[in-house]
Amino acid sequence: MRYCRWSLFVLFVALLSLAFGDIASYKTIATSAITATELQEHVRYLASDELEGRGAGTEGARKAREYIAALFADFRLRPFGENGSYFQPFTFTGRLRLGEGNELVLTLPDGQKRVFAPENEFLPLALSANGEVEGEVVFVGYGISAPEKGYDDYAQVDVRGKIALALRGMPANDTAFALKSTFPAKLKVAREKGAKALILVSGPLSPFEDAPAPFWNEPVMADAGILGVTVKSAFAEALFSLEPVQRRIDETRQPFSFPVQGARVRLKVNLQRERVMDANVIGFLEGSDPQLKGEVVVVGAHYDHMGVSVTKDGQQVIFNGADDNASGTAGLLELAQYFAANRHRIKRSLLFIAFGAEERGLIGSHHFVENPTVPLERIVAMVNLDMIGRLRNDTLYLLGVESSPVWKELITEINAQFNFTLRDSPGIFGASDHFPFYNKGIPVLFFFTGMHENYHRPSDDWDTLNYEGMEKLLHMVAAIVERIANLPKRPPFQRAPQPAERPAAPMRVAIGIVPDYAWEGEGVRLLGVRAGSPAEKAGLKAGDIIVEVAGKKIRNLYDYMDALSAAEPNKPVTFVLLRERQKVTVTVVPEPTRRREE
Image (cartoon, rainbow, N blue to C red; front, top):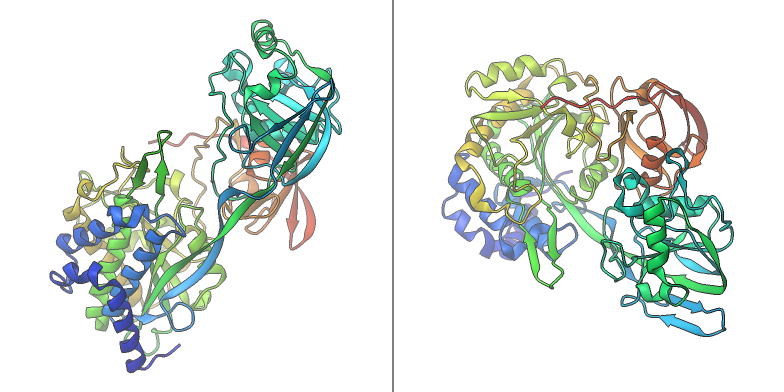
């Protein structure tokens, strides 16, 4: 991909005019060196309220992209996005909204009809399927089926072809039922019992407001395969008195389920997810060696964060994301500027990528490796910067060291100049944008300064960062990137050993999969499997889609977690996969969950 100097100049002027007000103050202090002052200037803008938290697909993210692209142009990086630009667009499924025609009509035993209003009196659950159903009503207590705990709300009733009505939460708030009391778990069991829909209500003894539960906007996955809504208590109270029924269940710890004779429900759900546009920002710097410049070292950082949240009282809260990851983006910009001014020092070419939508599930980096703007076989390594702004006691987390046999010696030699205390944090190895590259067989290094109390909080602001520490860290990164770019031979790739896992839920077993959170289809698609894990031993691999576990259909990640929670360590479990559209059955032997050491 080649661009004449005049075309590049025109592009530079256009971008500079778009972002001039944003980079003007930076230009007054800019040098070719990596400095704490310049890093702070980048972060102050990227983490400012003006950018409203840089949520993927938002106006703030667009401003961040234009800022990055304008500086790439200023540094005379070659555009390596699409159509001669710095941008590589992609779309993902964004926020939920109510479509037209959501409807809930209750026909009482005496023939009267009650119509409930969407938003105020009922709301679909985020995992609800779309569609229209009608049927008789069966009350199913808390909607929990846990025969292994001596409790099953469905044991004495038949909900096949009917509408299940259940209480939110768990009997007497007994946390022994915590995993069974979530919305996804209740939807799954209602579907498996044959119900057409599940209606959830907050009882008078429940710790929830008497209001429909707002649907959340997590990364998209397949729906639960059943209609599901939450309602105000007036819906259930029109059929029977909730308080004595709930009290009986809570006090006896025994199910009390029954059909509601003569009652019928008509329910229509129409949830819409908006397609959202976002983009990676990509700039290329050609190496100086005629033989090696065809090979590429990628330097990356994600520029997005969590955006804006609204509190119950309507107040807007901005998650500015200074450390996560304005810090890494600032570092990316300083490295791009430094190497652009010292391009004679590098033999291989460098590709600088600011990734979009990392917080939504590594969407931008996954899009790049599936649609690379340089052939993947030419990429020799990927260096990732994520949360590099909180260096403490010169302790630096450096992950991916075992992804190439040459990394350890190289890093030890270079670190002798900086004297960082280097640590690993394997439990988060798959949690940033280097991971899709690793899964393509590319050696990676991931720089990170550790978790802290401001992580994913509105308090992650520009004035909490250690800019002198960032400067020192980035001098080390620059030395490492330069060394990789000048190695006589490309670094070989090797699979890293499986790290110990710390699951989000209290699971007894682990199998070592890395789900693709950007997957929008049915089942659980794998972004990768951990080396040496039960999944790898069973033959699972990146791209497989898990559709069944132990005879249970898997529609989404929640179904998978629920099925795995019933598995026992060292006892074989049958998995059914889709691999290149063909069904494959494998046997996985889960291992006990290991807790990693801090």
